[in-house]
Image 1 (cartoon, rainbow, N blue to C red):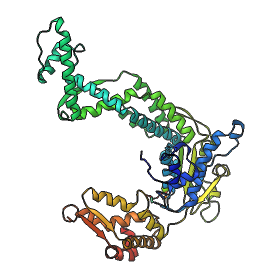
Image 2 (image 1 turned 90 degrees about the horizontal axis):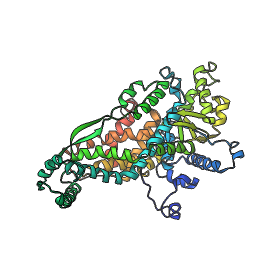
Image 3 (image 1 turned 30 degrees about the vertical axis):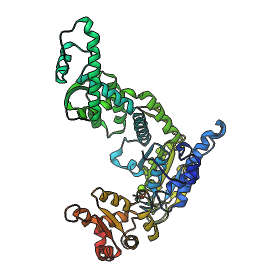
Length: 489
Ligand SMILES: Nc1ncnc2c1ncn2[C@@H]1O[C@H](COP(=O)(O)OP(=O)(O)OP(=O)(O)O)[C@@H](O)[C@H]1O
Ligand SMILES: [Mg+2]
């Protein structure tokens, strides 16, 4: 996971470290500002919601259940940062996060894939997250174990192996083996120890990486069969149970001939696996989901049924059904997963939708009540585009610059060029279709296509600068022509 480094006042107060589980609303907004331009209201709402969840957990038992969770509906056109805000929020808080499209639960193909699956996915995500955190913690130790195992293969320790093994590898490494008397055992052991030490140094120097060895590893690929059962909801559970059963069975081990470099990787996975306490991982993952999980429900407007206007055809059973299915989960219920039961009481739900046709008031009242916070995201302006191109940590221009730098090419844009790109994005959004900041992607890919293709062969400059004139030459005509831009930009 990425590390945040800034010299902001809030972070300095804490000695440069931010306490991710206890972020204050101010800190949350400050962090979100690094990636998302504008949308102040939405940032504030999610910040408050996140903090309130923490606050709610500390309220005395009797009152706690009375306090409503701060679930949010984000309303706004496409491409203005709804998903981005939720995703960044989760990353910031190191919270388990899943994104689901509400409309997919109404699709025919998803019969049987019940709404609870979003919680199961969340748990799956949390388990993966905790497992990789724990793996990181034991990586060094695992690497030591791997060295030991490699060493045992290359040069078995005296006493552990039989003489023939020893002879084989000993010969190769120029070790002298003679008929050994009991009194020479000590000497031999000493010799072996020294040779192993030398071998270890060679291993660490990376001088042996290409050498072939034979290792025995537990065979993988048990998951393959389960995937076939995957797509159906209930089967998913069944798959889980079967997988649990299978993991209890003795693992098949098979021999493989590999280079040391390859063996190192495989052995490391195996050693990490051995060092991690999966029970503890699961326990922590479940706790994380219950206390800090975030579910992002996209396109919630697609399961609302507009009752007014021409589109109103009375309640749509399937959509309303999905809303009813959502209720208990959002309200707080126990969901069983293959890792155990999860209480969803404190899971934060952030719903999002454009709400062009349906309005939040077209959701069933019970569900409206579960999403008490409404926040509107604004359409992005030309000025916003200028900032989005340049300010965020992951700004598009920075991404392209980083890409080209790997080829030794420095890519520069004049300020006026960036203004021109922003102007065009705004213009095309207005004339063709407003797809928000996504327009910047299409414009930049077009603008930089030749450069991306030409480097490194045709274009050999070490510095390329794009100015406003070039932007206009390349894109001006397309942007001005509505029909053309429909297809190209
Ligand atoms: N306010 C913003 N600041 C910075 N980048 C933004 C902003 N809004 C959108 N983007 C960029 O545009 C892309 C699309 O944004 P996002 O996925 O958040 O759209 P959305 O609002 O969820 O749209 P949709 O309703 O289509 O799901 C992202 O890659 C994001 O980086
Ligand atoms: Mg989205």
